[in-house]
Amino acid sequence: MKTSFLTFISILLFVFPTLLQAQSFEGVVTYKYKFKDKTGFLKPKDVKKLYGTQQKFYFKKDKYKNLLNGESQITETYLNDTLYITNKTVRAVMWVNAAKNTGKVISHSITKKAAVIDGVSCDLLKVRTSEGTIEYYFNSKYKIDREQFANHNYQYRAFCLEMTDGAIPLKFVFNTKKSYLEITCTDIQALNVAESVFDLPTGVAYIQKPKRMR
Image (cartoon, rainbow, N blue to C red):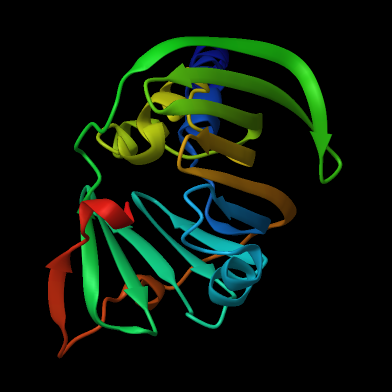
């Protein structure tokens, strides 16, 4: 009897940490949003009006959806290696093949305890790419299953998740010649997200997003 009990405890100690590691964050992350169009096509006041100042990310298993609070009500839904974009001003759903490489990583480095974001101590992954630079602030407490996003090459997300073992960004800065994007976490809520959140519009055309808009 004693031997059986010890065997059970040994199995539990082995399995339980594995189960903890396998857990994937599900919930909503709210970010403060900043965007700058360096081409001059969009003025700062136009950016703020169209895109807004806040972005909400809904994470669930192998999918996510983000919503911007600007007048255009832009959303991005990631499903099956594809990013679907809706925009109130466009009478269609645009899509992007997120598995396609748009550039290459040149170098990267990680700095421990680089900043505190929304009260959370964060490490920093810095990436230099052929398109520009990325600053990816993260804490391993908030992770998703990186294997389920292994083909998400849009904005180098797969690479960043691989380097951080699946940690989602609490701050993300992508600086290129054409644009500057910065999102900074202001709130994190772990909760059950309904599958319906990721439903795509029906009765509209689906078109590939033009390269000039990516």
